[in-house]
Image 1 (cartoon, one colour):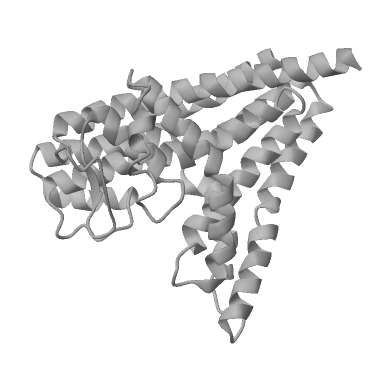
Image 2: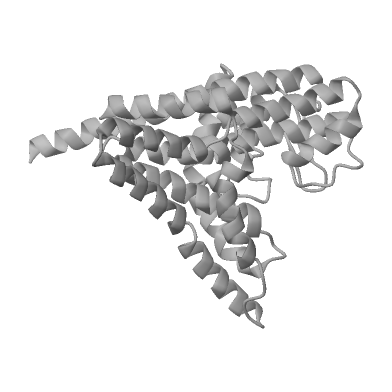
Length: 317
C-alpha cells in the first residue's frame, strides 16, 4: 500500500505541476467557500452566543467535504482499485496548491525588480492581507517571501501529511482527512479574524490542525536550503507572529535565505539581516519548490515507517 500511496501522491503533484489551480467554477474549494459565505453573519445577540455558534460551525462544516471526498473514493473502490486511486489523487490535487503559489510569488518579485510597484502591490493581495499601499519594494518582497513559506504549510503540507499517513491503510480515510483539513483551513481563512467572534472556533481548530504541518514545513525548508540548523536558529523569532504556527516556516525561510522578513508593526524575523533583494526572492521560490518535494518525501517516509511499525505489531500479536 505504500507504493499505492506514492503513486497517488505523485499523480496529485503532477496534476498541480501541469494544471495548477482549477478555475473557481470547477474548484471544490471555491464551492466550499460558497457554502461558508452565508454562515458569516450574526447568529446571536451576545458575543458568547456568536462564539458558541462559531464552534458549532467549526465542528460541522469541515465534515461536509470530508464525507463527500471519502464517500467518492469508497464508492469508486467497488468499480476498480485503479479508479479509486485516481479519485483519491484528484482529491489530494484539489486540496493542495503549489504551482499557483510559486507563480504568484514570482510575479510579485519580478514586478519589484522592474520597479513596477503598482503591479506588485496589486498582485501581492493574492498572497497577504495587509495594507500594501505604503510598502517599499523590499517590504513587498518580504511579504511575498513570508507568504511562500507560510502557504507551503497551509497549501500543501497540511493536507499531504495526513493523506500520506492514512493512505497505506485506507484511501477513503486519507481522502476524507485531506478534505477535512482543507475545510478547516478554508473556514479559518474566511471566518478566523479577531473582529468575528463566530470565527473563534475556526481559528482555534486551525491552530491545532496546523501545529505539526507548520513544523514539518520548517524542517523541509531547512533541508531544501541545505541548512538543517536553520530550524534551530529560527526558534528565536518563530513565536513572534500572532499565529502559533506560521512563524516556524517563515522564520526558518528567513534564516535559510539570510534575510529579514517583516510585517510592519506586527513582527520582525531575523532582525540582523537585510530585507530581501529580488535575487533573494528568486532564491526563495527555488527553496520553497524544493521544500515541497522534501515534504512529500518526508510524508512518504513517515507513512512507510508507520506501516512497518503496524506490521511488526501485528506479527508480534
